[in-house]
Length: 172
Image (cartoon, rainbow, N blue to C red; front, side):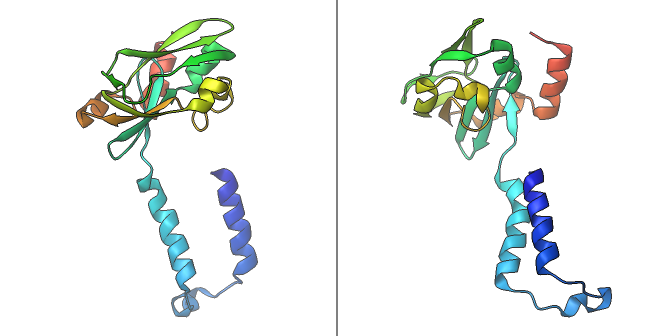
């Protein structure tokens, strides 16, 4: 995000010259400029916040579909992950039930579903290259996508601030 802001600042200083404050209302504005500013203003609201479980799984909800992975805290605690077992597509799973496993050179850990629903996609790249979880647990290292059967279940998950407090007070 910081890189984007720096790039935007460089672009705006190169593109727009100084304009006196009293003539700002008379500047011509192109359609491209309006579309760009509108997309920046609404992007935050189009992407849902990441939610966490007390077992260190995360989920991002987009409509009725959730993308699930493990937190940075969990991948650091596990160490170098060498094996990932992810639930199969079409599997129906319940919230809080074990649905997969991760093995590292230090330990093995179960993966629990943060919500109930049906698996609609799994990250086959993670099954082939489990170390993706270590290098990119929030982007390339996601585990599976699930179609939620009960949207109310997300109300009991932690937002990022609550999760950080949880880690500080309850390290596992």
